Length: 130
Image (cartoon, rainbow, N blue to C red; front, top):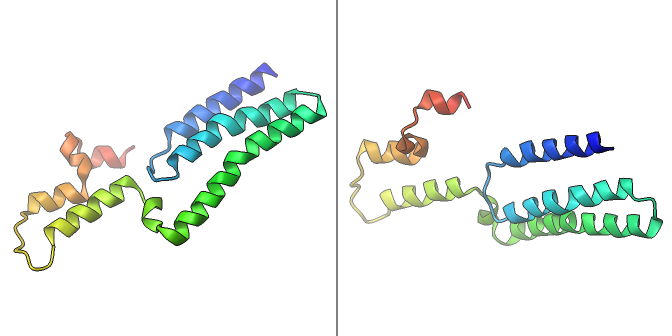
């Protein structure tokens, strides 16, 4: 049983390290990882029926909240579902090409908007190899 818990812990830590998309749903996705996985794990370990039902309900609640939140944001404000990187590029592009203003950006500005990792001193080859 301890091997299963170690395997679940290792799998969840590698999965959370891979989360790259930062949107409005990110906190609830973390809540799913923090609450749901242990609750379902305790459901398997515990033999008392009413405790199993309790932990299934507690573990299922963040999943239901995530589904409801996704559907809500999908219809009311889909911009919240997009990544932070998308918003930065969108606003920077809007600032450069705003109507009625002179286009004053040079090529370096456009490259830094399209490839923000170049600002951190990385090269394109390093980013593609990740």
